[in-house]
Image 1 (cartoon, rainbow, N blue to C red):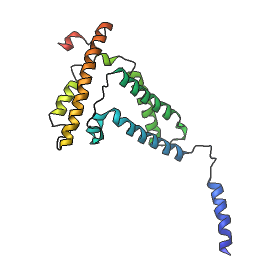
Image 2: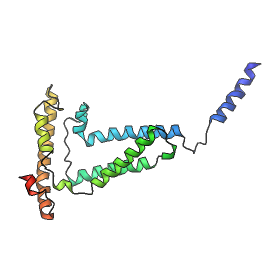
Image 3: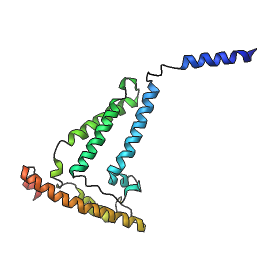
Length: 191
């Protein structure tokens, strides 16, 4: 007699536990934001291979994009815009706890990155504090993130050196463009 009620109980439980398929739940939103962050992270690493190397992800150790070129800046602008659009599709009111904070921080970060790209800092690629010329010397010294344990590691660094040559040529051209437009660092800092 117990067994004849099990199918009815199962159907009733299923019906009552199902929500409107068109309605997003807290769990859906939470899963959606986590998936978005995972996808963002994986798509970001090839754009920032030095960052990947710094976290011991060696897939991109042979790459060094020309991050001051107009084409690269357009590429990352599209990247940040894509993720700003994606995060905006998630209903913030459906999030709870740390997902709300993660949503706010991520969305603001995408906005800040896009706003930053409106400034022509690529026309001033060298400054007194940091820059790729300093980073390349540190990487090549062998005491930092760039591994030098295998032949592949050395070959990877040769790939980065090729990228650095392109970066340097672009830096020269960009600084000339900057001088024509009056976009230059203060003289005292350069001295």
